Image 1 (tube, rainbow, N blue to C red):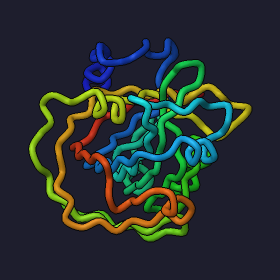
Image 2: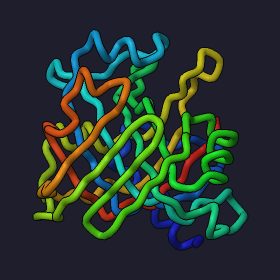
Image 3: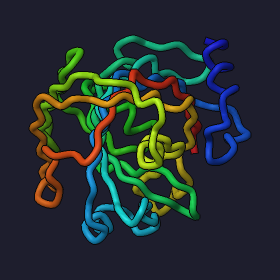
Image 4: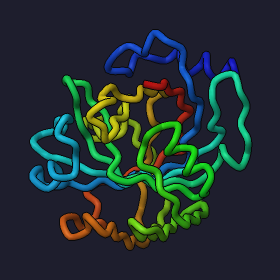
Length: 236
């Protein structure tokens, strides 16, 4: 594990700002990640995001993204993973924000596969985790929850050797903001750059109850696949 951490920490040239000076608190892996990206109208998005956060945009467009992945090996520094709690499927719906010109992400929804890890994640991270029934295979992802219904079938296509600005803007985010007027400092994270691939979508059936009237989730503007990243994270 020490070699893994040293490898992560040694690669920082892609970061938009320096890593925190204090010691990292969490280790986790975000594996087999699917990204589906959608443009959204600014006025609609503004109503979904706390007003202490500024909406981030690229070339005048605003975005939200579905990110479906498998969380692995999550544990606190100087402890070890417990398989049931440390490994589960997750789907989040996120958007792109700034506070004091520091870009990050804000989660509109986070759904996780296991009940007890969901409860613990809520308590320890303060992020909006909810339990959902999630199943996945090597080329499919299915979720049925109170907030959403998601069915994805896909094939992994060619690697993106030269990511465009929009690819990097959507993927390379190094802090997470909460829905809080008290704790406005972000949760800092660090990992190596995402290794991105194109994906061919074979089937897509997505419904987010509160947002589907504003976004056609079955027609993403952009999509990616990544084998994943190894992540260290800090508490606020």
